[in-house]
Amino acid sequence: MLHRTAARTLIGATALTLSITVVPAANASPVAAPHAHALLQPTTLYYDDSQAAEFRSAVVAGANSWNSSVRNVRLVEATAGQRADIKVIAFDGWPQSTLGPVRPGRQGTVWFGRQAVDEGYNTTRIAAHELGHSLGLPDRKPGPCSSLMSGSTGGVSCANATPNASEKAGVEADYASAAVAVPMSGRSIVDAP
Image 1 (cartoon, rainbow, N blue to C red):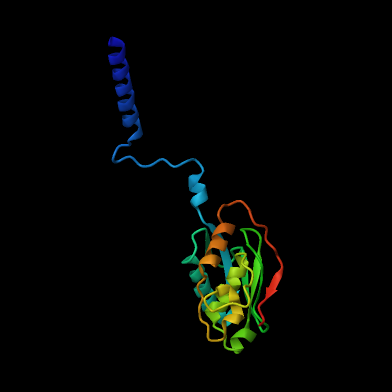
Image 2: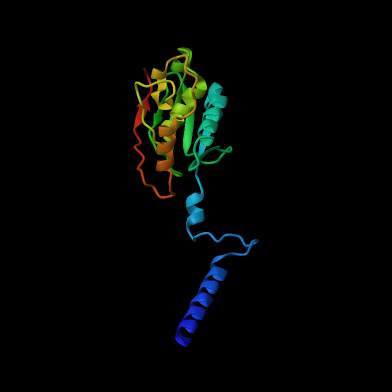
């Protein structure tokens, strides 16, 4: 009997000790795992729109569309003299881009083509679409207007500059960690219809 009472007392004391050590104080701050903070930081890519001419505001709007849609990567306008990861250049042909995913230190280029604008395509959609290529997304043609990466097949009247759930998930996966999980293609994609 004494043995059972001692065992119950020991078990009760152990349970009390565990509950005391497991329950943190109300004002204690949580302790993160050593690498958890690093994995939560988004990849920052700097873009240079100084050569985007009349399309600078569209480029900013396209970058903002991605920034409000995904967590793992941030597109930030480079300051004068700062090395950019994505260069945006206005030119007279069809829009085209280097297929990413671009990583810091590995530059991609977006050629913002006036030919698509002259035909009536929405400039913010063009910018967001081309930046989507820089983030590693291929074209999804033909496709509906609800698909940002459908590009010109969304139609001239399409002004959707927001990636759909699948496109967001693709970018989130490509930038899920700081390590280069998906190699940059480096090939140029021309977005002519």
